[in-house]
Image (cartoon, rainbow, N blue to C red):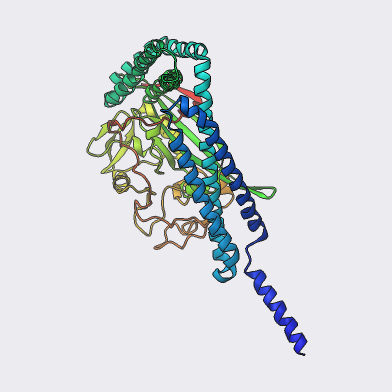
Length: 493
């Protein structure tokens, strides 16, 4: 009996010990990282030895400080290794889950520090090799620098200058920004000339190699940027002549083998200002299905039929607003303005209603389809209030009323009844699907991450300008590509 008790006690101790041990794969990774850390230390020592002789020739090089920084990174990595060894021994006392979490975190940090030190070591060796090569092959490098200088100074900036000047006339709010970008572009040529003339007149020696190498780097950058920056400025000037909306017209979730595939169908409605002064425009529309991530799908799932991105004419693509709003509302004038180039507020049955100008009936149909419902001023004021609070407007007239827009909207159910989303039962998940006139909505059962909105509720960035003149934004934004243009529907006057 005593022997059996001892056996079971030993077995229990063995089980407890095994439960307190980090997973074998994790322990193997820790051991492998320790070996790699030792290899990294050896490589750093070799680099220090290799550049020691070069430092006598190039005493101004900052390699010693870089080597010290790399060594400090390896020392921090070794400290992480010591902590990892303690965790392996003490995992039973700490608790396996906590020990594993801390071990994985320390291991990631140790790897990152080791790799950073190796990268720094490689960069130091590359610098030393290049400096020596420049001194030994100076004619080759000087010829390369002259070629880069000539590439910069021969760049023709007349076309982009002409386009910028035209854009500044049409969109004066962007004049300061465009002027600054154009001046920066021209400065590239001046800087390149200074770099080259200085290099050309500098005798090559060990003492001057660092300066010449820096000039070579600067000229290489100038040669690249003169073309890319000119193309970017040309594209930015062109973007000012387009207003566009991206309308979410369908959603689809399907299984392909073991994977779930998420897709969204987006219609891009684009208005090209052919003649700004005469307000002549072309309207185009294009639709495309796109695979998206699960998180991107969920982020727009409540917004079927909505404009999920909008850009006014006179703005860059990078300044587009990405908060969902009912399509077309951003083109309407505020009640205070009364009218703009797209339409005006008129009286109908004792109420103010938005009236589109005939030349924009096509735009109205692209936004709402053949079942366009007049927008009365009270509805617009609800939208305006939501915009002022930075919220998405779904068109509820009261907290208990169903939304008009978005995936659970009454208008959306009619407008997009043939969509995959509605056909697959997406709308049926809405708390309003079968009780349009209920005093209070049922709780939604569709699994959307956000609840049904209060009047003008929702969260997002401020949307649209209500037809007001666009203002300039800060300099240095990187533009996104202009949306693709589909079938053209002709010029609108």
